[in-house]
Length: 109
Image (spheres, rainbow, N blue to C red):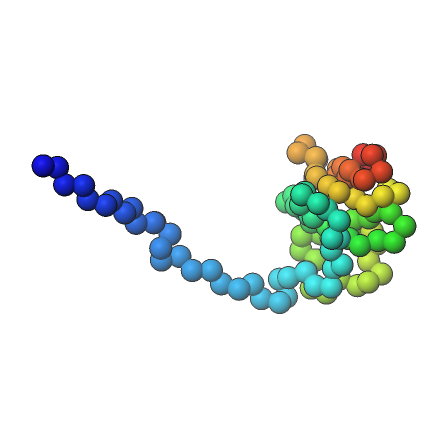
């Protein structure tokens, strides 16, 4: 008779532990939008972090240099242009300085 032994594979990550990031390496005071539905609320490339933010009178997002961490001032400039909430943003795969945004108002910029 064959014996059926339960085979449990050990994970190679069983001894890996995460460390919390220090406050000076975090982004603070960003009013992230709650209207992104099923899409992501941010997009990242090697130079910039873009985050969809709460905005009155339409949609907006802010673009932050990756190295600019810490508290983000309320008067930090945002990219505005949509009449409805921004639903998705993504960076161009060929240029770190080109971003596209899609809005509930059926426009892509």
